Length: 110
Image 1 (cartoon, rainbow, N blue to C red):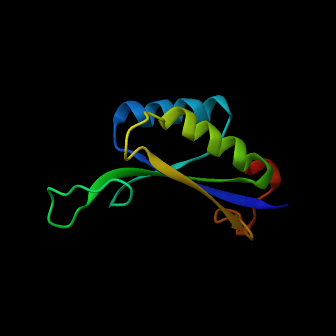
Image 2 (image 1 turned 180 degrees about the horizontal axis):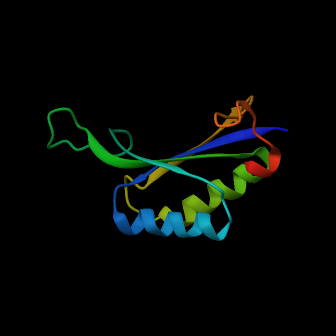
Image 3 (image 1 turned 90 degrees about the vertical axis):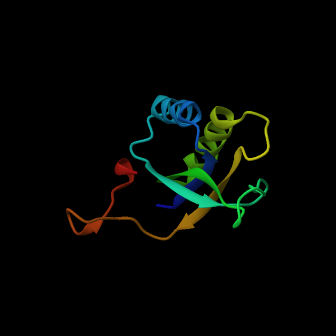
């Protein structure tokens, strides 16, 4: 089974995050990881000494054939048309393991 990791860096706005979470639940994505991150890219805070801005990172492990659908759903939900909306990347994953079972994850778990 081929797996992918979808990583999105999106606006820190609670409204945007809730829209993304709702959309992923509609797609029955079985699990996500959300973290607060700092950085700069297309949008930088020039009023800050280090240019850093706060964003939200959403990470999802999924079957490779669902990665594009999930990435599109995130972009639709997070889009405001403003600088700093974020980005989405799809990365290949060789294997996924479940720590509880100490075994490779089954396709129906991802």
